[in-house]
Length: 89
Image (cartoon, rainbow, N blue to C red; front, side, top):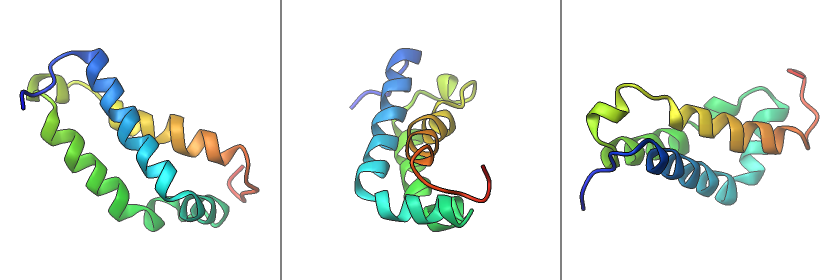
């Protein structure tokens, strides 16, 4: 399978991976946001997703983006975070 070499496709992949994390881990995400342990609770899922993302993207695109991190924040933290009570907001 060829590596992704366009910014648009890179963003789509990042968002797809973040969406899968959100879909399969909603309770863990809620708990992590409520207790301000989001990155600890989801460390394995986020790391596994990042490895997959990095393996599919052309190195020249990968070096100049933060699409994966942005997708985690935009899709997971912002989306579910709006629905939970948290001591951090």
